Length: 332
Image (cartoon, rainbow, N blue to C red; front, side, top):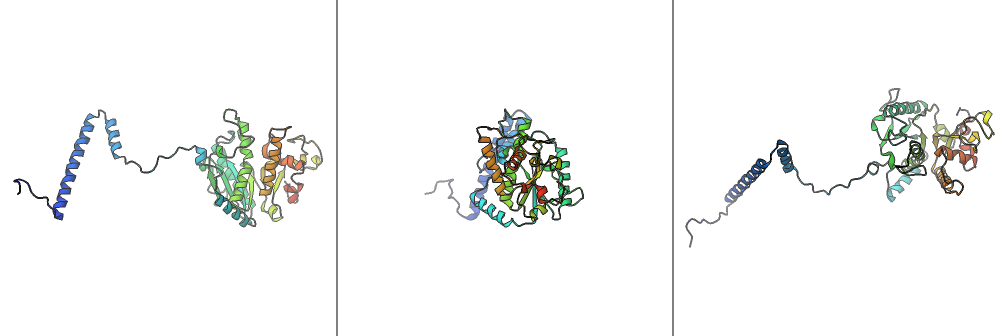
């Protein structure tokens, strides 16, 4: 028996839609009333704005990201897996006979001994790269490691398009070496020496990544010779002697020599050089033996160029790696 006032629940689609619509309206009205009460309890306009903004936020389904330091987020030399290292090795083998020469340089304006400002770095980089373009028959590629991408020029001083690969990274991410000191003991000189020693790591990484020949060039160095000629004459590694004048030949001391124990003819620059992987490993091995020696235990003052000079004096590097011996018709 039916009770008066009670109706059976409708089951047709039209009735179902109407019930859903009525429920939605009731929920909307209830939510509006709740929001109005909340706003009436909020005293200031700023609080009202903040509360409305909080209602609009949608919770993210992704986990909260882990905060990382800038050096981890922007490494100058990225970490690579074993498979990537194999690919790097294949690229190196494929690129051994390339005619193009890659150059690499640092263009850091912070945490590098405070020697370069942004404007000076920008001007120097453009002048240096333009000299490379003028000197080389084949367009050179320059790899720039910098903390300010704005310093990288889009064109040369001649108005031609630049072929520059920039890597924006944190200088503190470079591998630590014997010149690196803790932040409380670091000085401008030690920061600069640590960065200068890291040139070797960067060149090695580029060879492993891209293959072919890589030449290190300092930011304040200009080149007026096609350095590809050195590789075309069979040289796989070379360095630039600082003093090659006849007045210094064979002498144990000469004006401006960096080391009393090194003959002036083996006094080498660190501004411009090219080493293959075998020569790089020789430098690393010599460095390990030098700093672990019971008589030394301290790296030489002039980092890489000191190691180059000492290795030449001790016969670890042959004299034929001096660029003026490879290209005797040119003045170095």
